[in-house]
Image (cartoon, rainbow, N blue to C red; front, side, top):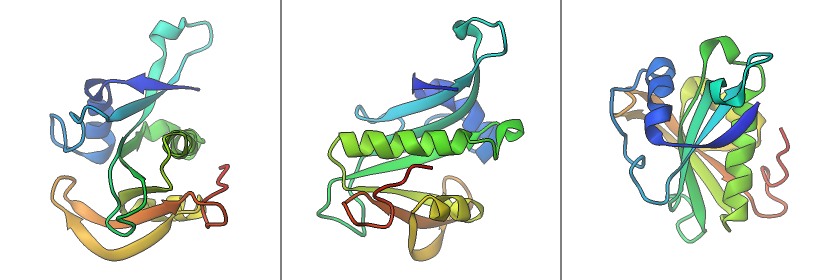
Length: 160
């Protein structure tokens, strides 16, 4: 697996397939500071240029409502090809998000996570906060998820 930066347009088809999002950018996609990551997997003997996109996630520096004074990164649109789920792709993306956020000086990483994904994030050290809400863009129930990256916090040493 190779994790690299991609454009939001490259992430869009996989997000639509997995997350059932409408076409076009979502809030954050066009932010000049947004980073969109893709996980590629090349078939045996294939050149890297033909590697299949099997996972995507986006992130940007943005304050967390639950930690308003802490430097924070927000991530969204994590999606993994259905036939590649539960094989470590999501873990690789989350590790990249947390590492990049920490490297940028963030002490908090957060997301509005779909309820079925909460166990994955909680197992990785994230903490559910706030109430369950209906996300008008995704059209699903979500709950805020927070990773505290400060030393000694629950999610500070996440390694997958």
